Length: 331
Ligand code: TRP
Image 1 (cartoon, rainbow, N blue to C red):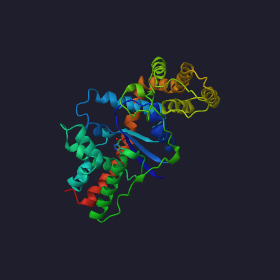
Image 2: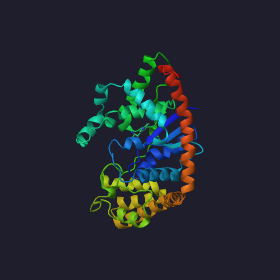
Image 3: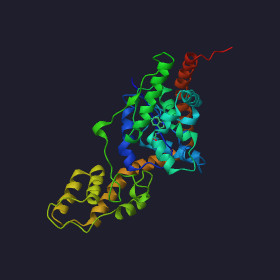
Image 4: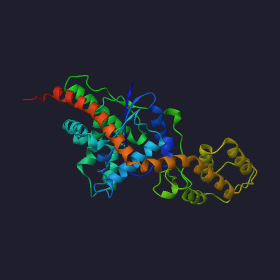
């Protein structure tokens, strides 16, 4: 079975866009791959060195992924900082990572622009830590979005370089896990682009959001003054809301409003009310699971303990072999 690793940064709650993006595919992947999913709390320190509530952020993400269907029996779910072997490999990979190549990584250059007062070495070596995350389990597949492609390329470079330098075939060279056509794009509520793309919280519907707040956000979603011609093409904000409806509502509901739009009889108020109720219908069971799991400290402790044990078993084995390959010997 192919080994998959993916890291999740503990910044922000899951919204519908995340759900239909990565999360749904993670859940499916568990059936056919040996998956390691972890919360990248070390990585989060590169941009948030003094988080107000690091543990709370990690906990939130963990709860939400469990509630959406990541299964600790099928996958290995763990917290990055619970597996110290990752940092050991990170250190060793840094010995063969060149400052020049790290400085050329686009996301590093972006960060330099974004946080000029905190261009820390962790930011520079973000790709080596990420490589360590993956190759510590000798993974072959990494499910990442477009924004992570260069990091993946670096991972491949570091794995290949290790193999070349120590004349071994030790690390498999990981490649992208392609979701292909299966990625559903969820639009945001602010009239343009994907959900979560813009920073404003009004643009996204979160999985833990209560019905009242969902109603409010949907009712405030950007629209226009309405269609003026029969069967006219929908402008982006309207098309976005229809796309959202296609994701959460029954087919005949979408058809109903589509017809009204095409006849210039649509009332956006009614349309949005229906959309809000269907979103709520969709998110309610997830929200309830989030609440249940959130209240179950024992369960969370069990999940994390089991996860770190499984992850360390694999990591310790790899590290032991790496030490041997490089030449560290016991006295
Ligand atoms: N950098 C990834 C992100 O920002 C998170 C991440 C950390 C990751 N380590 C990883 C993803 C290893 C895949 C594999 O989303």
